[in-house]
Amino acid sequence: MTAHDWYVEHCVDFVTRTLDSGDETSFADHLRRCEECKAAVQSIERDFAWLPMGAPPVRPRPGFRRQILRDVLGDRQPAWRRWIVPIALAASVLIAFGLYVSERRESDRIARALSTRTGELMALRDSLSVMRQAARVLQASISMNGHEGGLLIFADDVSHRWNVVVHGLPPAPPGETYQFWFICSDGMVRGATVTSEPGRPVFLTLGMPAEGGTVIGAALTMEPKSNRSPEPRGKELAHMLL
Amino acid sequence: MSADADRSRERSRPAGTSAGDGGRFVILHEKELCQRLVARDEQALVELVDVATPWLLGVTHAMLSDAGDAEDVVMQTFEIAWNRVGLVRDDGSDLVPWLLRIARNRAIDQLRARRRHQMKTQLIATLGGLDEDVTPATEPNEAAQPGWHVHETVKAAIGALPDDQRTAILLAYFRGLTQSEIAEHLAIPLGTVKTRLRLAFDKLRVSLATVKDWNL
Image (cartoon, rainbow over all chains, first blue to last red; front, side, top):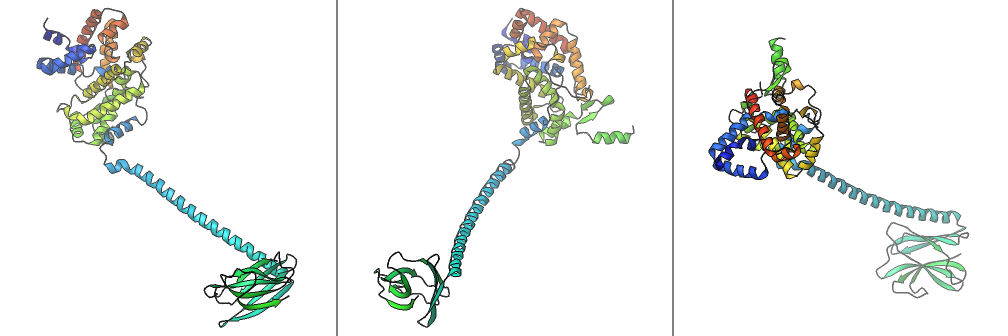
């Protein structure tokens, strides 16, 4: 038997793939060079074309046919169609995150504004309580640079606090400031600096000073900002005694 | 049934399939289907997947004994078919056999690549013939399955073989064993296996000569 005879004899075995690995590789090499064997193999393939259908058909699971089509045809879709869903998802996540951040900032801003307003409301309630409980009310008029203003004091003897209202005064000249003083039995005691704004009264709620003895009155002066002395040195605008 | 009703029923089916007598479905116009596949007609692929998938799953499942692996091979088969359909003969007559050959060869490659023969041989020991193997449920209406009569013919041809030859064919062709593996599995000489396969294939060659295409 020649080598070629061996290949002719094993054509069926090659087609049905019952040769061992080594023989199968050798046969495939021979087939590339031998037209006679190639024709014989093709003829045998046709003879056994339907033999695989000896196995009974198997019902595909639901969705398997669709999966095949998606896999086979998937690569032929335009790039934008393949990426549209991931891009849309990413965009949705980014938009949602942006809205969250924006809403969070707005929420924080509103919370801060509410806190400020709550503080102001508490201060106003406190001021109002001082005014409602005031045992004495003192008032002095102040004329300054054509403005007619005044100093109003509501003295609460229960809580020992004064609610002071300064109104109608122009802003202080550069380098100077309005200064409120307590007149005490032992001398003048520095109270609070008053920052005047046009058209808006200034409200101060002050406790009694710990030093200087008994409070017997109050004064408002215009002081140089550099003055840190315990005694007033500027022009006196109002002076009142209890 | 009137001719109009017949025509109406015909139109309701996918193109490329038709109903014969007794509800038998067959692929018609294989040449046209093949040309449409070459022209990248996606609907033609849908029709081919529809009729061929159960048979491809049948042969791959019989060989691999694993539903997931069988599905993988069938998917690969259709990918190859879609990309290389131009290799089919012009008349399209060997379209389905070509798919079956690709699927079977892929299944054998997978078996050998994964060195699953030992596991498979152990599994075979617990199995009987093709009708009592591990294949899951077949189509509910088998007679309506396109190609069912081809299956019946092939099955009858295999069933007509003597027991020893039929066993050798089942192990070789539907379980993917080589001649040496069959000899080892049956504990018989290699020469005996070769003789049994030679005789069996010669008989099948004659029996299957009447099967020319999907439409018997």
